[in-house]
Image (cartoon, rainbow, N blue to C red; front, side):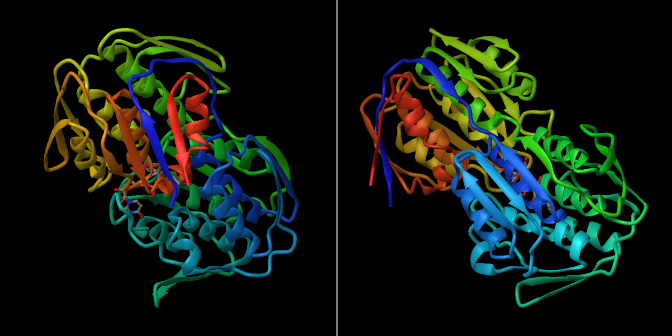
Length: 416
Ligand code: EPZ
């Protein structure tokens, strides 16, 4: 298993190009199941999760040609309506094939995704919504069996805001008969990006970007071309890296209007941010100030940025409180950060951080995707050398992070 070796204490300076958003690319690839025509996708990030999703879709018969960040899909020859356990267990987002398969073929057999490091992450709302649309669903032997001659539009109110739940139901509703209303819909930019693609494919959707999506079902969807939205979480991750190490970097091929809550916090930390239509410049020369925050659904402070900001709080001037309200176990990075000399204690879903002058390098272990990113940030700021094990977690959601960081002065190498 690969590991990263980082010699901390280097300021970051230069330019980093941001990749397309993992959490937009994954549902967008599944949208290829909704049409017999071709989808011409660009800015598709080169990530392990994207490769996993393409493998899953190909075994269903979806034609997928990947050429760098360009992916051509064609759903004209789909012959398997199943997502097997051995593929779903490595990536929960596989559940996103359920809605499209049901909508276009009236049938699906999808393995229940297991839990993961950050929580049990059930899919009961996906099932509730699809049953409301008329699907007959049973769960046997760890598989979801779903059948429906033709989905029928209706009003669905999910118990809580769910990103992939909204995406599954939105894709299903595009081919259902009549009108579907999704109340309590997720408003994440990645949901909006999927909706924008579906519109290009001929879907009729109103309320995009709001918590109420109104969809008029259509007979069929046609092909389209689309460029995946920039990854706001990768963007925020690199902004936290500069906040922790000090420096001056420009992030290119990104957006500055989809991570307001995180950018406001960075300004409170003391980072100077200037923005353009597709770039953000971050300058930092002082010790970070400690900031409190609690995670919530978009447009609030994103849970996917919690660990990265905690890394900055570890060396900040002052004490801080971080509350995680979305997942029940998303503090796996805390013990590892304490191994680097951080002073974090946890009470329920709140972490209390006492900023220390200096972290010290040590061997640590990645436990989940964003925890790995937070350990990279802590290691970049720490004195001495840090080794991060199990960085396959990092590779799921970041395209060659060590290469991008090396280009702006970090001393970071991948050891096979
Ligand atoms: C998406 O996961 C993202 N993944 C996650 O990003 C992100 O952290 C999360 O949304 C929250 O923003 C993708 O988009 C592929 P949810 P998702 O359904 O859709 C509960 C990353 O780091 N819930 O919005 O699985 C659930 O347990 C990943 O890139 C139910 O109880 O999250 C959680 O507590 C990690 N029943 C809360 O809702 C359901 O049927 C929000 O989950 C669905 C969700």
